[in-house]
Amino acid sequence: MGVVNVTPDSFSDGGRWFDPESAVKRGLDLVAEGADLVDVGGESTRPGATRVDEAEELRRVLPVVRELVDRGVLVSVDTTRASVAGRALDAGARMVNDVSGGRADPAMVPLVAERAVPFVVMHWRGQSVDMNDRAVYADVVGEVVGELRESLAGAVAGGIAPELLVVDPGLGFAKRAEHDLALLAALGRIRADLPFPLLVAASRKRFLGRVLAGPDGAPPPARERDAATAAVSALAAAAGAWAVRVHEARASADAVRVARAIDEADRRVGDGGEGAA
Image (cartoon, rainbow, N blue to C red):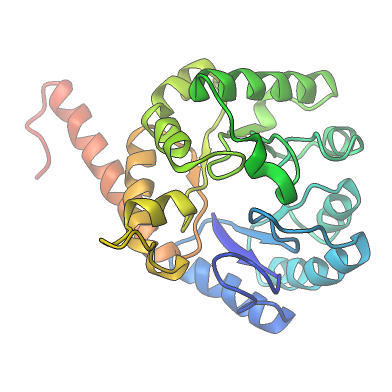
């Protein structure tokens, strides 16, 4: 899943794709580099970000969704507003990626149920403006799984077919670096406890900056974390993730292909074959 942020204040690309023409070109480039679908969002969800109004979010998102769909791209819309999701689906988007898991807007679950499209349910504890204050856990894996289970149950109770649900542990959302790393280490457990397709969205996030920090403790800029992102993509693929959400597609697409090839070779060996040629 390639990311197109049609925002002036994204943590990772700071408005590089803010105008529709640039955003469309970016989406097409991501597909050319190996993205299977493109996730278009018009509102920054970085820590501390304040919300934009509905009209502005629609103005940013809809032209990009329409043009990418017209170019044959499979598009997901990244929004917590049912009104924006509905208009994006009308424009041809095929999936809704809601970082609140349907909790920010009570109209979201009924909309997705009516439209019968795939729905990403992410772990979420509140809006970006104060989510860092909510990063308090005694058992981060157990609590994230439990809270996701509640959101998934709410989605099903609201009429969304279970087979259309995708789960996302919400790396970086109300979580510190140690929480993100613990969740990545537990992807197998998360998949076992929550038997839904798993989306891993680690791209360029703060915890990677912490891991890559130099001797002075300063993290590299977000755009210098793509190799680390690809490493997470390979690990996520090896753990059976359904998709990874990334800002740069080529390295992660290659990493996923390598992970898949190793998995296939392992199965051949397990079946008594001679291994990869």
